[in-house]
Amino acid sequence: MSSSRRASTERTLLSLVPPAPESATRRRAREGHDRHFLSRLDRLNDEHLAIALSLYRDAPLTKTILFLESFWFPDDARRVAISLDDPKDGPFVILTRDAHFVTCLGRGMYLGNMPVIPREALDALCLRVAELRAWVNAAASKPNGG
Image 1 (tube, helix red, strand yellow):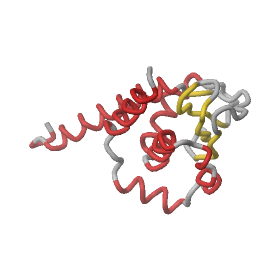
Image 2: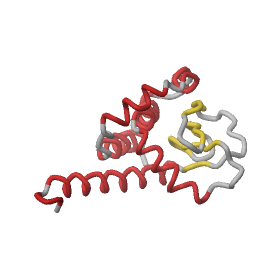
Image 3: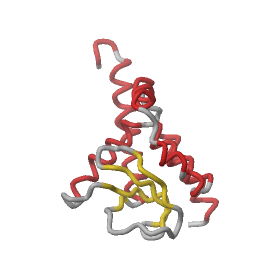
Image 4: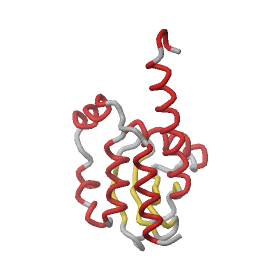
């Protein structure tokens, strides 16, 4: 896939996921920001930065992704990498299993042996969450809950 087509696809997938309720954003702000993660965002290009910040700002989406993918993780894995592009070369967002953002690794940086959620899985899960949120919103807007 060409880089311009991939960039267009990335923007399209992110736009499909509606924003989380405002309460989720407020909750993260109350708990404090993940300072180290935020200080490492300069390792990402603009396209990957947009994805990383979307995950950071949407705690329910990120927790859902980690929950659904956690069945594939070894029990002793304390951290998980989300691939923003290539599953081997990165770049990656590193999170704890309970969805605290740890750091970003730029393309080619050493990942170690932590489990990786491939970009394809991230995209597929974002689409599923978008569909679920649309379904819940549609049901909530119907009289008597649908």
